[in-house]
Amino acid sequence: MNYDIKDIKLADEGSLRIEWASQSMPVLNRIRERFAKEKPLEGVRLAACLHVTTETASLMQTLKAGGADVFVCASNPLSTQDDVAASLVKHDEIPVFAIKGEDNETYYRHINAVLDAKPQYTMDDGADLISTLHSDRTDILDQVKGGTEETTTGIIRLRSMATDGVLKCPVIAVNDAKTKHFFDNRYGTGQSTMDGMIRATNRLIAGTRFVVCGYGWCGRGLAMRARGMGANVIVTEIDPTAALEAVMDGFTLMPIDEAAKVGDFFCTVTGNIKVIRKEHFATMKDGAIVANSGHFNVELDLDGLKEITKSARIIRQFVEEHTLEDGRRINVLGEGRLINLAAAEGHPSSVMDMSFANQALGIEYMIKNGDSLEKTVYPVPEEIDREIAKEKLAALCVGIDTLTAEQEEYLASWTMGT
Image 1 (cartoon, rainbow, N blue to C red):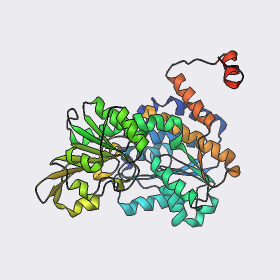
Image 2: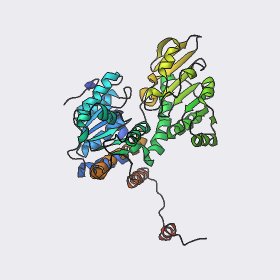
Image 3: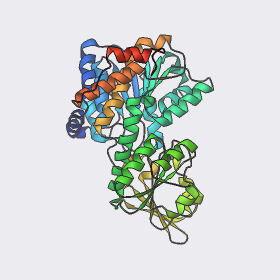
Image 4: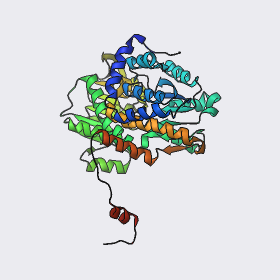
C-alpha cells in the first residue's frame, strides 16, 4: 500500500485518540453499523481531501465499512494529526498522504497522489481536490461522478465554477446543511478557535478588545465564545444585515480601519482575501495578536505585513513576532492558517458527528442519484438533514413533540382562520 506520513510508529497513540473521539460521535457510529451491513459504497473509489484528525478518521472508517476504497490527503498543511494518519494506515489499511507542516509542493503532491487512484467520487474541504481535477488533472475528470464539499470557502469556489459553467460534476454542499453550519460552524468554530488562540499564546482573554472579522455562522460562534470569556468584542462586517444582527446581539460594530487601532486580539472568519491588510497592520498597537480561522491564510495580508516588518522571529511555538520600524510588535499565530487546527485539535467530536454524518449520507445519496443530477452545487436533501437531527436528539436522550392530526390539518389548510 502506498502512503506518505510522518511516522508509522505513532499509530497506536493515534488509535486511542480516534477511539476517544468516536465515543462522542453516536450518529456516525449508527451510520457505520448500517453501512457495514448494507455495503452501499461497495466497489466505489473515493478520494478525500480533509483535515486529517481523529474525527475524520471515524468518517474514513465509516466509508470503508460501507465498502468504499478510500484514499486520504490533507486539506491544509498544518491541520494533520500525524498519529491519526499513522493509525489509519496501520490499523485500517487506508492510504494516507498527509504530514503536519508539509510545504506547498508536498501538499499538492499529496493531492495528486489520491487522484492517481482514479476516484469516482470526491470529498473536499476547501475545494482543492475539485479545483485540481479541473485544472491539472483533467485526464481523469470524466470518470468523476460527483462529490461533497465541507466548508464555506469551498462552496464559494464551487458556486463560482458552476456559475461560469466549468464545473464538470455535481457536488453536494455539506456545509449548507442545517445540522452542519448551525452547529459545526457556530459552536465548533467558536470553541476550537478560542482553544487554538489560547494554546498558542497562553494570554488572558478577559478585559481585552477582541476583534472578530466577519459575522457569518463562524463569526457568530467566535464572538459568542470571546464574550463568554470576558472580552469586549468588536465585529467588522461588509454585509449590512449581518452587521445589524451583530449590533442587536450586543456587539460593538466598526470598520476594520478603526478596529485595527484598538484591538488586542484579531481573528478573521470570512472566507475572503486580504481582510486584514498592510495598512491595518501598520496601525495596530504594540503586542497585537492576529489569527485566522478561515480555511485559507489569504484572509491575512502576510506579504503586506512582511513589507513593513523590520525583523521577525518565532518567539513561541505557533507565534511569529513581527517587529515594525518603530518597535511595535505584531504577533501572527499559526502562520495565518486556521488556528483551531494549526495550534489545537479542531472542532469537538460531538459537533463533527453531525457534519460527518452529512458527509457519509451525502456520498451515499450521490452514489444512488448522481446519474440524474446536473453539474452544479446541490444542498443536502432535507430528509437527510432532519434524520441527522433526530438521531442526534435520540443520542442525547432528548424528546420532542409531534403534531396532532388536528395540528397537521390546520397547517395544511387555508380555510381555517381565527
